[in-house]
Length: 286
Length: 275
Ligand SMILES: Nc1ncnc2c1ncn2[C@@H]1O[C@H](COP(=O)(O)OP(=O)(O)OP(=O)(O)O)[C@@H](O)[C@H]1O
Ligand SMILES: [Mg+2]
Image 1 (tube, helix red, strand yellow):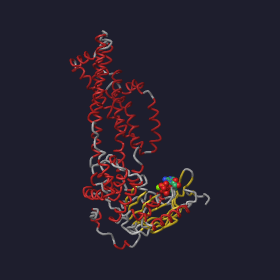
Image 2 (image 1 turned 30 degrees about the vertical axis):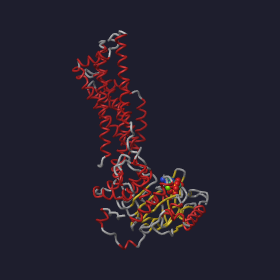
Image 3 (image 1 turned 45 degrees about the horizontal axis):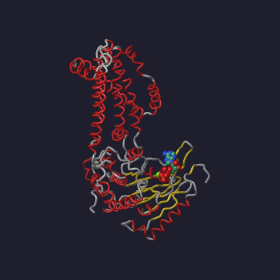
Image 4 (image 1 turned 180 degrees about the vertical axis):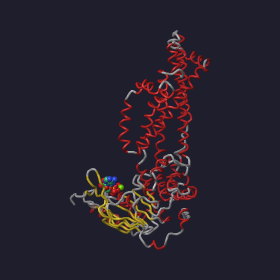
């Protein structure tokens, strides 16, 4: 497999400073988020501290309502923490910024645009030179096996293919980090397994840093270098566990006893933290 | 990887291709309604001839077409002001409707203050207000165009603001995460997403714009197809009225066709690389 051409921007900027390599790419320091809701404030995240190193694949795992998306949106600058601070690449995150790529549960492609143009969407928004990124768009699409579909419209693609287009779109401007919020949970089990393999190949090739939100314990264990379990009431990080499986990873590691043990351990942790309550309300009994 | 992706790719390739027999069913979709219309005209003609219906009551299709063929010059002189005023009313109604929808979409104050009033306005049988427009604006073109705008803009406002609101929330979040400005979101996402809505509103508006002008002509005009219809009917010249109505239908079709053409062009522009 040929190495992916660097984005024009990266080529122009030259290599990033070596000094920053030792520092974590993402630093989340004692972050809390309270939403002001109609039925009183909702404490979505009570306290979270987390460092993510460059090139690391970290999953946020936990039951519904435990604040995974909230934490991810704060890293993306789409929500402001109520307390604490988040920094990305050494600078604080206060608003959305150009150096992140996001993927949601739905591909959210523009239905009137071709696959290729959808991938180029961030380039247009960021006012980068479109023609110089076209080749990169095609390479990314080839990497996920969609080279024959450049001129197709999203409606002509399956759910898995649409999600692959969304991955290419998130990578097109070569962001420092990829934030993924349950990107595959709308897909059927077989497609989901395929997408997990595809994603792990992409990560092996691009070396991107990823924070990946999921409900699926197996998916988290298969993809991640580290799995962070959120839970409890009010919600916090209750486990931060490295995944001791080598790379490249393919689906057959899921049959190994070590993998089975890890899945079991994660499941027990989730169940322990999941004392019946889904969300913490400030002032509510604990 | 090649394996996993290959299977899905292979399965997908067949889908976009057109089904066999699609051409046949297309022909059917065109021929059936035309056939039915011709049948109705034939029955009408037969009824006039066999039933000896006097032309004052109901002119036959053939005599109407004959009249159009003979006096097309008169019909044309009346068709032009009607069509021009309708087109003007329609364009102004569309511009006003889209502009109001933009205001309603972006200003919460405007939305809360304006929208209920617009809906209330819609409940008024607006045709009843036509004579007032003549008091306010006189008997010239401006009062007919203003009345035409007045009854045609509403569906554009409603459809367009529904279109602007139809944008997927995830898409908006994606735009914000990319540091997109409101202007960029509007140009790249909201407006193109609303296009099908806007054009469906405009297709309703175009017929309403014509109705507005015709009503204006009924009341005031010295020219135009509406005037011709009223004038001829008053003199029991039903054949002329019928011919004017047929020409009016053709004018309506023309304007509707232009809107449909505009839609095709807009879709092509937005599907293309640019923007
Ligand atoms: N914009 C908001 N306003 C008010 N409350 C919110 C908002 N977004 C999330 N919440 C609340 O915060 C809590 C955490 O929500 P969040 O979406 O982060 O959970 P999650 O772990 O992503 O859940 P899921 O797995 O179902 O996606 C929930 O109780 C939710 O109701
Ligand atoms: Mg979520």
